[in-house]
Amino acid sequence: MLCIDSIHAFGVIGTRFRVKFFFVSLDFSNGKVYNTGEACNQADFSNEGTMRFVNYSVFYRDLKIHGLEYAARHSRELGFEAVEFLDIVPFGELSPINRYSPDEVKRVLREYHLEVSCFSVAVNLDCEERCEQLLRAVDYAASIASPRFHHTVMEKMRREDIQKPYEEVFETVYPYVARVAEHCRARGIECLYEPQGFYFNGVEGLGRLFDRLSARFSNVGICGDVANSLFVDVSAESIYNAFAKKIKHVHIKDYRMTDHPDPETTPYVSRGGTYLYDCPIGAGVTDFRYCFETLKAAGYKGDVSFEILGDDRTILQAMDYVKKLMKEVWKKAL
Image 1 (cartoon, rainbow, N blue to C red):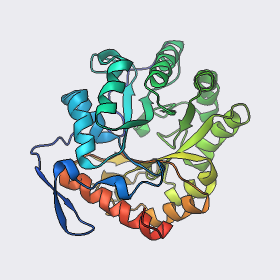
Image 2: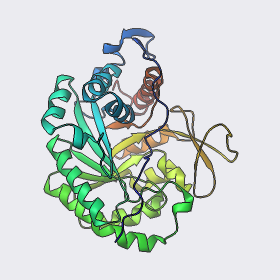
Image 3: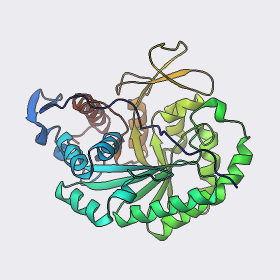
Image 4: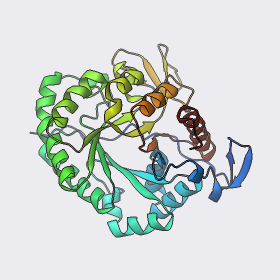
């Protein structure tokens, strides 16, 4: 089978890059001002190694532009305790797999007291070649001690790309998805799937795939992305109601939704034609309180990974917003 066109973009990759650096950071929860090396220290937030704040999108951007040392240092300065890697199939020159040996990754992260929370890969998993590259990524994730591996299945973000029926796509991708899950199991890694794209999204689209996988593999779980289901006009509340007890990892971001496009900004467009725009955490349609209350009821103690971009102030404000809300929901000094 021929592979379709290579992926050039993933949900966390944006066009907004840092234009200036802040040498002073604010902890908005108590009004204090810190040096960046102390910014938003998570020592009082972690719960014996659980519910850590994870740097995802900013770590990816820093890694690609500035390299591993800077990305690790900046993650720690912002107050993150762990990082999430992102790679894109086909792997290019800037792929961490091609740039950094596992020993180098472990050494640098250890130097900055960081751990790997998850290794994520964007892929259209519809052919043998891409499956082999994904298996290689699983091996790399295991070698840097990542406990989780998350990958897309059909990374389709435009309505005009959706031409084949669900059943046909399912039967094409399932054997490859199962091989990756088995490869993860052999290496002691959880394999995660999130609501994403237009095929394997929503309660039904993701649920049919996950039900078949979970009947066969004990190491599979859901990445509880709080906003991706909007692409198929399904709320995060519906996703969390359906999959709460299966969620092993959480991606944090937010979208503003409107029926009227902004002529100055290129939007995503949902399956039903609604326009989606990136926005600050808490300023969009995601009901974070509901999602966190659902996670609490399910006994969730996993990580919270920030899939957002922006300058340091934007990131710190997002972290503070989530931290305050989680404190209220869990009703303890996290």
